[in-house]
Length: 233
Image 1 (spheres, rainbow, N blue to C red):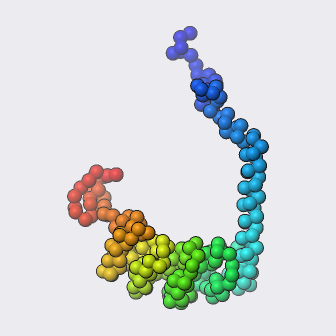
Image 2 (cartoon, rainbow, N blue to C red):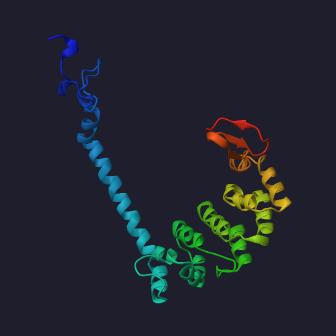
């Protein structure tokens, strides 16, 4: 039988192909690594560290969840407060009371990220701004920036412009840029243009300000700024 008519054999399966230099199959290094005592010990250590961190997180979060449960806002975990806008709004005074306590940064970030201001929020807008300005832990500050982003409506954008222009607020300001993009106020757009020249904000600002394209006839796209047609990407 000629080579062209030979049926593929199991020996030619990808996992059995030989490495020309070492004579091992492609899957051998992975299987050997999994069997190695060092690898097994490393996996056991990683699993244990993850279990301990998860347990510590549950313990640290327990007082908050207890207060939320007493108020009838959660059944099983902290994240039940996100089920409805009403439950999140009702939880604000409990969240604020715990945010100022000396919890680990990851717990404070979870709480801070759930704060909401505005008509349906329940937290005072200027209080939220103050918490953001004064926060020194980067992880928590980013969570508070997210809370501001969720809360920002209408005239609130003026305060966000001030936050974005204040370089003391660091890289967390990048989370606030979409607030400026949503606004039609000229000074909001001006602040976004300025962000193009800020090393901490330039990538996101340039992305938000990229030329918009509108889909035209027959699958082509029309550049919204120049009106020229281009091929669809």
